[in-house]
Image 1 (cartoon, rainbow, N blue to C red):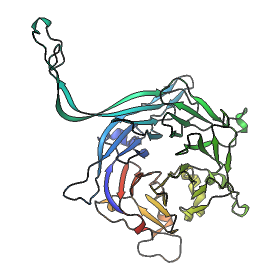
Image 2 (cartoon, one colour):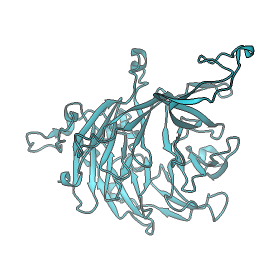
Image 3 (cartoon, rainbow, N blue to C red):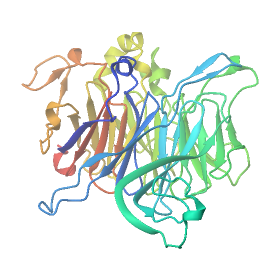
Image 4 (cartoon, rainbow, N blue to C red):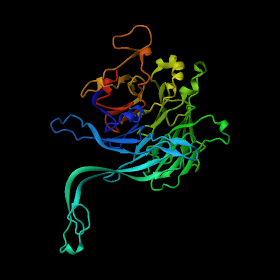
Length: 446
């Protein structure tokens, strides 16, 4: 894995007041469907879009790098006066819509409000108006003696970002995920207890398709943690729960999908049961494979691959950082045990990726069963630098470059990752830095 570029994920740089409040901490990363654009959202409510530069003619084999394309304020802090609640501006999720024309569109959401943004380019401007002068002021009509045809003149490229629709008042609880349907007309949004279906053209109403809220909130035993539409079948979607289960729902069966079509759950080994079992089994992310055959889930210690046709257990389980099993007590005390790590597939569904602590991220090759631990850091991300595999040791003999489990930095965590849809390019969000790495992955899987 070779480092391609390293850049702060927000431009321009925030002021010192914002830095101290953590406003520039990246909270989501998402490639568009072609991989030419990459969007990040942060705790300050900003969205930064990076565009891949065309490959250089002088270096035909070098990949184009990602540079800042546009930056805009997506959400502002709000206050719910009825509930006396502050609503953070933090961007929870970004989802790109498939491109229909020259413009790009994306959905961004904070805890309550989802917004649809349109991104367009302008590199020409009309000149030669009949009734207005060059500054746009109306001319004295008595001076207009002839008609002229306005012409388009080249101008510096300008990227315009405009809000097209605002989908508000759909959620009582915090929105944790949004997913665009393969029909390109609808999308769903999920909070802790409900999932709503929206039409992209209608903002004033949504349909509630899942509701797990009990009549008495004291009977509440689990919450929804993530949800996603199937990539090819517009009637299917999956949602995960804090109890470690996945429910596949079919919208053709009934309008309210409270009764799932399939329940994916792995029975717990009684010998491994502990005080922390329920916390670490909570699924923090679920992703369909590009083929639609498999689902990838991440819980605190593992990533699992599930076959849609087998509900009893996952077909593959990979240990992300099993060396933390003995540290769960201290991780509970510092709240790290509640961290929500994401996971990602590569374009061919053959390699999976997820984050860990100490700015480490893990890759697992499904074919060879090899895995590698890599580190996102300023030292390792100089252009064209080769990333070295890292190892964490637990007691006993240590190799020269090994890192002791006791010296891991739990404040440095890779929660958000994204993989280019077709190429071996990955985006890693490490606190307030965005790392972009590229090159062959399989050659490094050892």
